[in-house]
Image (cartoon, rainbow, N blue to C red; front, side, top):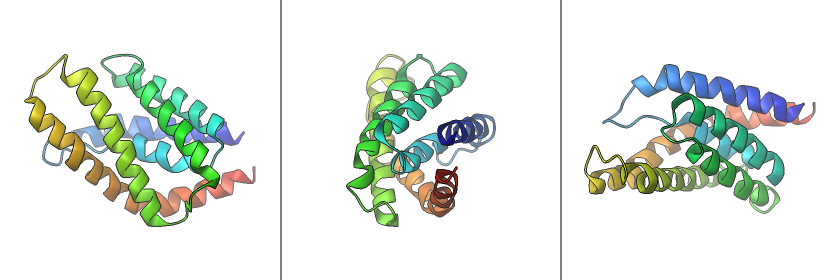
Length: 162
């Protein structure tokens, strides 16, 4: 039941992200709420659950807006699995840990997108895309994680009892 609730919340986040947030650009950069969501919830579920939730939400995001089916599914699956492994090995209630892991998740997603998508469909210069993906996108996602982490952690703890 917990996984279904987490997937439904993830679907809601993807819908909000794609219908509202993607149209709010900050220096031609858009917030990736789903990466932050997968990063935080994966720390509070087992690795198989994090991987499954990441895979389902990644496939859904690919189906809705992806240029290639499978890119977001792969990224979300890997993040869910790896951070699910770290679930009991790190202090996940520390905001610094959440911010660092969000930075690495965003960096991983940006690099995969830059390598796979920008090299094939380069509409902007590769160096600019790389700088944007390595510095600006992870920083923006970290700021969002800073704002939302406490609410999301409390939510995951509450549904953990279901």
